[in-house]
Amino acid sequence: MSYRIRRIVPHVVLLVYVVIVLYPLLFVINASLKNNSEITTNPWGLPQQWYFENYTNALSNALFGRYFLNSLYISATATVLTILLSTALAFALTRMRFRRPGQLVYGFLLLSLLIPPASLLIPLYIMVKDVGLYNTPFALIVPYTTFGLPLTVFIIAAFLKSIPRELEEAGVVDGLSIYGVLGRVVIPLTMPTLVTVFILNFINHWNEFIMANLFLSTQQLRTLPVAIVAFADQFNMNYGALTASITISIVPVIIIYALLQKKIIEGVAAGSIKG
Image 1 (cartoon, rainbow, N blue to C red):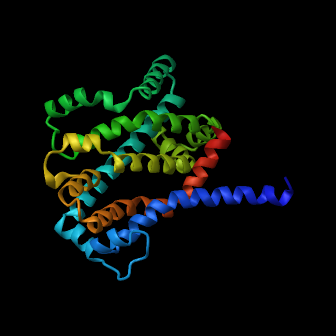
Image 2: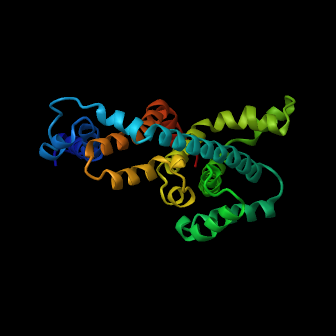
Image 3: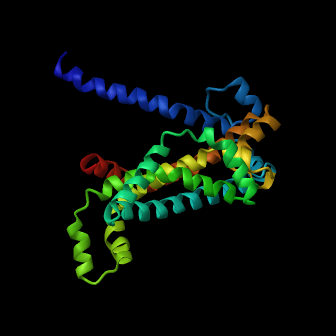
């Protein structure tokens, strides 16, 4: 194989991969701008006339604005709690002197990664009802935070082990308390990794369906994945409004990726070098 062909092949493979990834997204966005009859008669072509009423119907008539805010509130709150608790726990496990209990806690966290969340749904459902969280936003925020802790602690702890202790000791010499060292030395150094785990957790919470469908019974509290399924059942022939609602659910993830892509790349690169 000549040198020129070896250079072209990776680009062709990447181009095919990009088309495979982007095509479903572009198809949904394209369909969301057509009326129902045009989607069925001309599913592959561009809209002959922009039909923005699909978004109006999704946001006003179908209450997707409310469902969007529900998903945003629950996902953001659970993600922030996961990051705060994981950072403090990872710092304690990697820096403080309680080796055996610390190793035991760390071992339990890693062991919990082997347990599929679906196998815990029934006991979790009973616990959520017993403590009075059923049909409240915290019926999802608490489980989301709990399930997000093991992997997040594992990633942050792996990065913290690569940070020289001398930096923290220098902070102590300058008069910082343990909380000052965590807030002014450790967290700034760990920021690319924190951004990466923030994205991972937020997307997991944003797309979660089973617990959201099981723990919330009131229509006003629905999250977007549950609302989209219910919307599809209720208006299974209104493809325009359905694709518009799916497009609305994708927008926050795209915005977060666009705003934080530099930090995500830094976090992945830091993990590959220091992990």
